[in-house]
Amino acid sequence: MFFGNFFGPKVRYFAAGQKQLFQHLKTCLQTDNKTIWFHVSSLGEYEQALPLIEKIKSKYTDYQIVLTFFSASGYEVKKDNSPADCVSYLPIDTRQNVKKFLDLVQPNLVFFVKYDLWPNFLYELKKRQIKTYLISGVFTKNHPFFKAYSSWLKASLKAFNRFFVQDKNSKKVLQQQGFQNVTTTGDTRFDRVYQIAQTAPAYDFVKNFKQDKILLIAGSTWPKDEELLTRYINENTENYKTIIAPHEIDDKHIAEIEKKLKVSSIRYSDINPDTKLSDFKVLILNTIGLLNKIYADANIVYVGNGFGKSIHNIQEPAVFGVPIITGPHIEKFKEAVDLKILGGLVSIQNYSELQNILHNLIQNADLRSQKALITKEYALKNVGATGKIMKYLSL
Figure 1 (cartoon, rainbow, N blue to C red):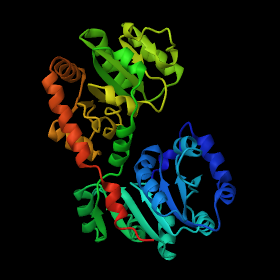
Figure 2: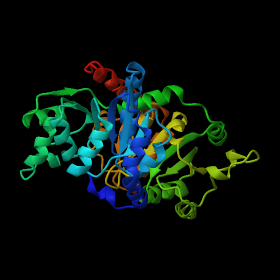
Figure 3: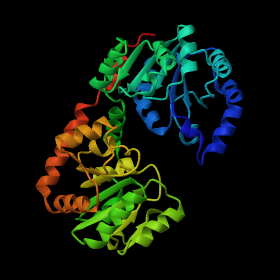
Figure 4: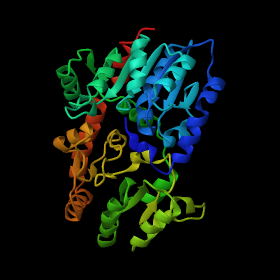
């Protein structure tokens, strides 16, 4: 439950979506079908839900799938592009909205994903005795629902028939709070990235750019990441090439990256049949939808926003078996902490540390292979959460 989502560049879409959502639901719901409702916050949680949505849709063909998003960024991307039968915004969590939504959707089964938990919805689901589950849940002793002043939030969690959580610590925290209906299944996101890895195509533009060089892919980078990376690229002319996939891909931001670079670079959007990609040192991926697939060609991956509030997805490169570098703020992400302890991930604090680890990885093939094996084994070990959850479901 994050109210900060109300404030941002997508607020216009969000406001319009809220205004139209009940009429939209009336047009897309199939009133004769039984319903399974999935709620996700945004795209990251959608990716966690997707393996389970696909399994349920194939097994329970007489049910329609309703998928709701809280964020505009998630809804706008997936409103016409998901296996769900009806995609909608989630209405604001007021008692009136909750009753109106549930009266309209009439779900037989409900799934919330990870952390986007809304107390009025949960209270009403409990009141109506609708089976409700949490998947890929993460709980710590400092969870906002467990504060001394938030007993009413904690009480709303009684709506869940079962918590499917990512790790043993989450299970322990819930049990200490009096919830015994907890199963440790892991993170369904690993199932999703594994699916992607099995079907990732080979892209000629990556092959033509990389040639026989070491390839560093910097994914979902933010300005602090780009400041350090461009400095390294400018100062170190070793036998490697770099693909930078910024989090923001507007022209202004891409131009800022280009301005920092003192080596030859090209935007993905500027590639044409006559482009000799081997001539360029840096390729800027100013498009969406390719990053999680081209990790297959990486020798080293830098995952962005580790200097911000939260790093981006490290499961995506891990499943391909590649050493991972990121910034210092990884404590909220179990997979990052685990991989750091195991040695597959390096968390840097400053430019000197980035320079040291990149130089070592570029120069030492054995070190790259060692760390790549760790990330690959860890990712494969964590695949299978969807199957564990399916064993508990009975419709």
